[in-house]
Image 1 (tube, rainbow, N blue to C red):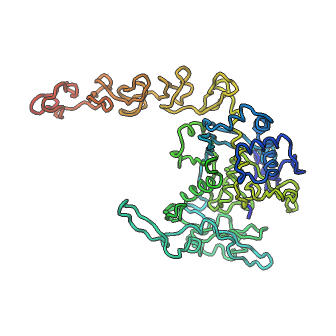
Image 2: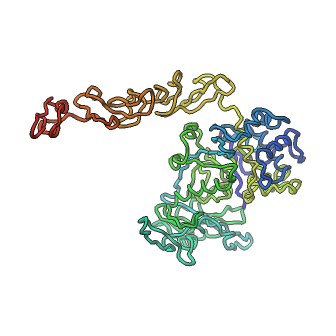
Image 3: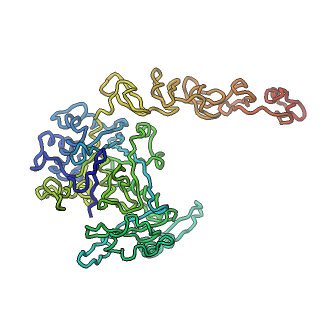
Length: 584
């Protein structure tokens, strides 16, 4: 079953499911321009694996429409459709390319009013492209402390209201197990629990969700609203605490079913390494979102997709990648505990109309299609006319296009899960675009500076740098979040505790930096003058651990046999000698 995308405009107008999410007008007769044909020729040079190329004519149609609807399309096409070689085409062929953030917009189904943004970080190493899409993931618990998993859909006979068995039971609830289906053993070598499934284990779709448990006082609220009559329920199924949930869109001949569990419950699943892993429900939802998108879109030894979820997996990404991103670059996704409206449409990011752009029941196929929009790709299928029929005149559903096998392409049909590298080409070719041109810092947004150089065409706004990152010796203060640059490093005055990393004295709360000429050091002291009032420098041979300590009171031990020069440790200024060595 196809899950169509919901299109919105940048204001308050909703372009509903009746809108035309289709191809551009210039390909209605299946022909493409000479420029497009040359562009696709260069694509085949950059992604030469014929097994991933699909149909050339459909690739031309896809590329021509996406170039036209991309705000950067003309800029790119002038380069990639060039009949000869040029510097930027040579650049795209290079084996190694520095990290670059790509920002732009595409006109969703060709309407300027429905412009949507794409943003990602590109780099290339040893011939392999890496693309990082930044996300901020949020759970909107419309039913508090609960997570819903997809079970599947049932076909409804509209004449009799009879419902079928679950169609293609491959929803997430069929791949997760509760503790009753698992055996746990302690590994003596590691001291950790090792899990295995019992013989013929039953998934939560059959155990936890064979029946429904209502919240206290709500039993019976959905009487007469089961199966074909589930359209009478609210999409949240708010009266059900745990177990089976259902919803039907009244004008559809199918009914959707889910499995509701407590977010605190331990669940188990079998990962790609065939190991049984324990996980919390929300963690599984997020990890699966990342997993499904990355596994679909990555091409071994050619293209690697990475989804960056802020607050969750930043440790997997380089400082260079994180520094390139501004706070507005992260695409917000909201996973809601409900059946989504608009005939179960979903969007690649949250917006004012589709605030909950995903459900926790969203399927993997929908994730891969929606992440395609984060690539900056438009839909290729036709929308509905006012009379409810499908407009196939200018979409991948048009019979004139059948010979091109467009339904194998994920942006035409979410069931078309074949990998086609024309989409990757559209994304990576934007590497040559000019991004946020600037000539001075005031041309940039808050938190950014103008990375200006000799070639004004390549001056870009980039994120300001954190403490200890490299900054320009002359103009570096404008590059630093703190506004301070010393000896080529950003720093915040008096921010580093004793023993912490520093590059200059002014960064230390106490003491001085052991760095020499801007090399990495630590905040230490050498004498009492480096410490504040009431403190002394506990110095020794190892300058890295010399620290300021509070002066000692009368009777406190200030030395040991044979030691001298300890008077400065005492508030009184006198450390008594043999035999006690105490402060006076």
